[in-house]
Length: 288
Image (cartoon, rainbow, N blue to C red):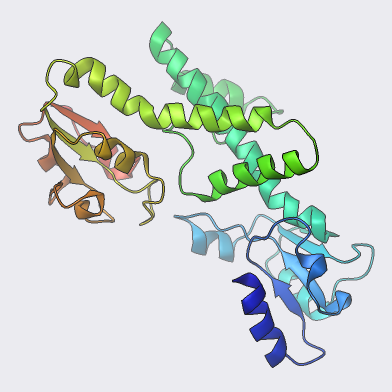
């Protein structure tokens, strides 16, 4: 699809036009594009579901792939990016293409560690929320680190990059076992809600009435791609499931799912209620 779109665009472009590729591409892609090198750039997109507009208006930095980063960036492009008042990082195409994957890999590493440690906290009587400030005050980790436990890696983009790294490692004869372990850890976390539910409810009552709060893969988005909630619901075939999500209709999880009009409705006559998405409004709910 990218090659096709480029072929359409380049035919319509003036010979002196700049071509800036924004979509994520595999390392090595941009340098193979047939367009004058001094007019060809790869700009790393930093889209985050749930805060896309905010990040577009107030970017943390611009990562700009160039044929030769020692050369001056095109004046018009540079002036446009400079208007956002953030660092501009020119680098060779291949480095920029790998930069987004690198960012995601570091995020996955943190998520995997946090999820493992948070579960240990539950088992030994510790409170992860008390530990977080200690980590944020460590300069090697920092106050902006992603330290919220969750249900694995979802949404699709991070998982795609994990598989990309594994593929590149195989081609280049490098060890990607740590990436494989992250995927394994993610799958474990996605299955964790069902494991706990089975132990506490389904083992004795396989036909239980279950309430599910949240269907999107994370808060502030409509995306249900690789959502842990949908994975859980698929395993509850014998149960009567009522679900609510402020962004999507419960029927996205299946025609047999009962759609609640508000959050508290999922608790009516329920044997158990699971909060599967960290929507802010769910924090205000009382267990009573």
